[in-house]
Length: 517
Image 1 (tube, rainbow, N blue to C red):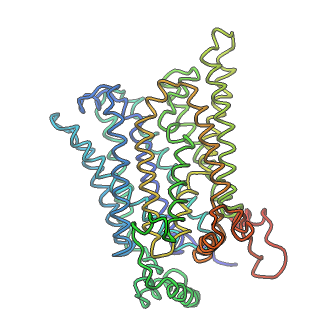
Image 2: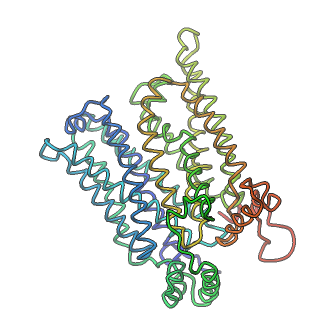
Image 3: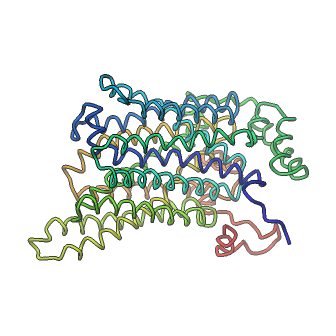
């Protein structure tokens, strides 16, 4: 019987486990501030009122830190290696979290400034995590399992979100919204992630692709042997060396990536539009305003908070379909399917939100519109997770050459940071003024995201990094970015491999899904 490898002996699985835990750190912060913002002791310590715009600014300034951190740590990842950059961003996130924890601890004057500093410093670290981890993970995954690896990591992101919200909710229920430790404990609990990761850091291999790119071939050989074994490592080393020859001398900077005449402009724009479209799905606003949406459907505050936790738990389990499907049916299919489901769910939420607001006048029982509204919101959350959460972070790691992969992922984080900064600032205004009509706006923005994806997003799954470069070369020759006009639409579909390398029919979809299990 073949020995089953565990996370403790399989090097690739160790990388997935490490990367998953690092991405969970990012998820934890997303869920951490939601209930802290309503804690009366926190607001008093910061010297602000609950309706003060600074409540939103404290949250959103973190995303600006993420954008800057992505640039800094992507540079470090390219210059000094993926591992040193990972060490730096984890240490930075830990420091920022500690600064947040001590803000106003035993003093009041200047507490708000310290909290701002903590949020920015932690943003620098988490932005580094978001830019370096996907690159590191994808460079150590095989071509037909990159999507599964990253989707599993982003399922851990939702685990972190659940953990933060659960700790917040439990402490709020048992200690109350006026207790200092009901908001300080959730902050310091996040230290489990960076400190735990730093403790096991030395067991990780450096990226062989990074070694090859820096002409450290002996180190690359040692890293591949450590990851894959001697025989497979030697074979892969030859392939990486050949690919490196094709990229040699091609130094690429951010100026090149934003130059419309440069070959990297096309993949850069796809990366930017991916994050813009992810923001247009509207789920950033839904995740921030989950409790208020349940209140809009007619539920009291505490029950709305419990329903939000239930939504996040459902989110975590539905994310399983993301890593089962993303390599089996392709990136385009899950993105387009996610858009279609989100459009439908937001149209339904517009309807049920409107009926809920007029239920007394119309004589409609509250539960008759609240329950289908809950189902619609749960399904919208799952559709976003399966279709749009991990996929948008995966694509930049697949469409850039090694010389620009870290910068490309950094651009993705920068746009994500700026988009979320805007969302967290605008959402209170939009939600308070539009109420349930905001869902109709999201239905329209999802339509735009889906249409753009259909026409311009190439299928990058099942292809090597080098094969994906061919799309951009062919697009330049065809004089069009429309996927359907490049090589007769070949990049609209996933290239199903032959089973076991044999001639014959392509591997059936159900077999590919089975292989992911």
